[in-house]
Amino acid sequence: MGFDRVANIAAAIVGVAMVTTLVSSPNTARVVSAIGNTFIGSLRAAMGR
Image 1 (cartoon, rainbow, N blue to C red):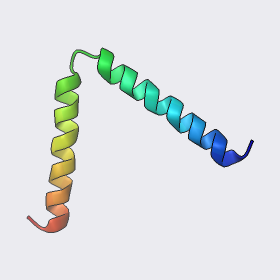
Image 2: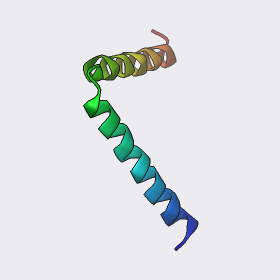
Image 3: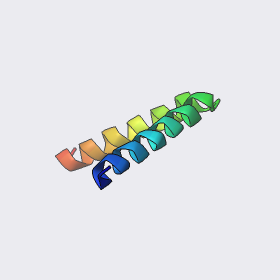
Image 4: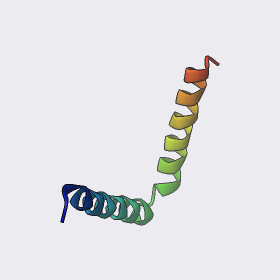
């Protein structure tokens, strides 16, 4: 088994853990909204708006 395969499996496990944590958290909507707003803000800053 190559290192890339091990890294892909580890990334998948971390991704599932993150989704599980977000779904089980009562503040999920606020967290997702904050991440979205941060992403939009960074895009606007990159475009100079």
